[in-house]
Length: 252
Image 1 (tube, rainbow, N blue to C red):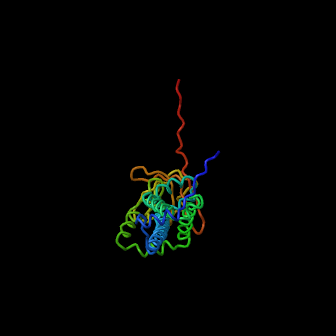
Image 2: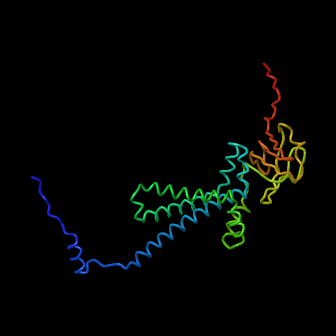
Image 3: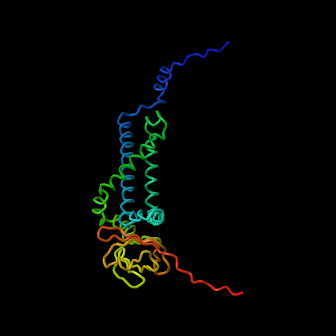
């Protein structure tokens, strides 16, 4: 026969522990403080994550990285070069922190935790992207650009950051037979070689025009492969053709 175990009277057990001072009651204010701390920590982690994500978009907009989406897959290399990966890592850390705090709540055990984790990710992403499209990130960070550490971050990430070796965007300040002198938003002057362009770019460029290019840096000269110029509301595309190879005579 199956052995029947005696029932345990938990009320008597708890009462016995209380009488022997083995169980200490905690004030309701302690529970209230813990709950308030967790809720505040969670909200702060999400808020910082949103601000960091919107700041990443802000930096990439200021550096002109998103301008290279017009070049298709060639522009992706320039975009990836301009991602502030240190800020991305910090944003991920705050996302992890928000998940850690979220796991301390009782309700997080009632459903699979990945549901709550995905919820936090969606909230941070949607709010960060919304700030970018509404221009709210410009309002926030432009006003903070001259404050202490924000000023240093602004200088390091935007003012002193070139667009990379694979893409250039700027204003034409000089024109010669086979090259252009382009000034980037950071004030850097770049000599751009424009030989073998199809169609010919010479008749379309002018002083002060905005120009976008993908190519490769070669020493102090940028070898442009694909160029985009906006002129009179129209977009003109130019690409570099291979240098013609003269025919060779084969002697027996």
